[in-house]
Image 1 (cartoon, rainbow, N blue to C red):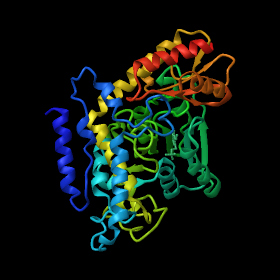
Image 2: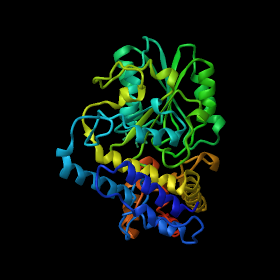
Image 3: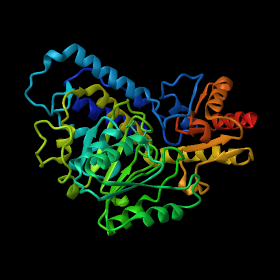
Image 4: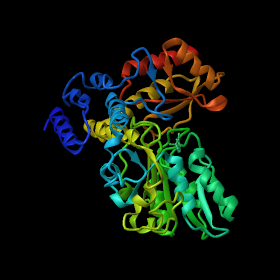
Length: 421
Ligand SMILES: Cc1ncc(COP(=O)(O)O)c(C=O)c1O
């Protein structure tokens, strides 16, 4: 089936499911056919991003495809117009507020995206929420150890710092090289830190400040062999690379849609393996706090929330699937590698992303000798309205490449770096 026909079919199925509210969006029907020589140019046209600006920072917050924006606005309009239609007869069917609805359709799509099952998936607002639900909900004794790295994002780490301070757990931040030379170097550093007291391994699946893909599968296998609960922080992976939680063998995985997936801000999820989720206490408790027949719903029921952002999130998954996760990853990697190859040719550029291309995808962190991150960031903007993100004085900039970028933009960025150096 051509991708255009698939898009049209999914729209008509969507229209059936949403027959209670007016208007579905047909933007995805404009998607190019897979063999279109102008494929990526036409994909770029699906984004609302201003044509005179070049966005290199989906590692912080993504650019939304138009269909995401439209789906959100339509649902907002629906609520604004028809909230009186709400008859309070079926929380799971009526879509005026989230927080009480089991969000089965969306959770099914998230489950399919990461190869989990629906009861293993809870919807949250972001990665920080998800990680805190796990850190706060897991039972640890004083002296129990949590192993992580010295390169975690504060949103992944904070909940464990609370755990240490409040319950006497011991949080160990294992130094990991930046740049790393090999996966085995990272693996060895972490495994060496395991002791008989280690109860939790929490680690980013992709390190935010270097773009390093960690040897997550191998680490989870070794940790599990020792009875250690494993959690991967996938903030930078979801929407960038294919994630298969069963293959990774982790006990828990947390992620968001507002970065690489191009969903609206305030959309995240938490996955915990079926046989482990029952032991995680509810943090934000409502009616279902102790109901275990749908564990993911127990965590999803968190009080009134916004349905339009969930509609946008759902549209972002549809858009991603319409292109295909492998194809998205292939393009991101192609552009990332093109950037790194260009940078490697300049001796005045230091790259903090791993030297081994197998450990890199769409995030490249680098610094031009003698310049701060802010100076580099400002030069990109002044020269070409390009927006990578400063990493401060030591690490230069984090430069993300995504499907809305082009090889020409990468080449121009390299020329600007060469000009700076
Ligand atoms: C690895 C990692 N973990 C956690 C977070 C926090 O994500 P959120 O703002 O969705 O809570 C980020 C954000 O950049 C991140 O890169």
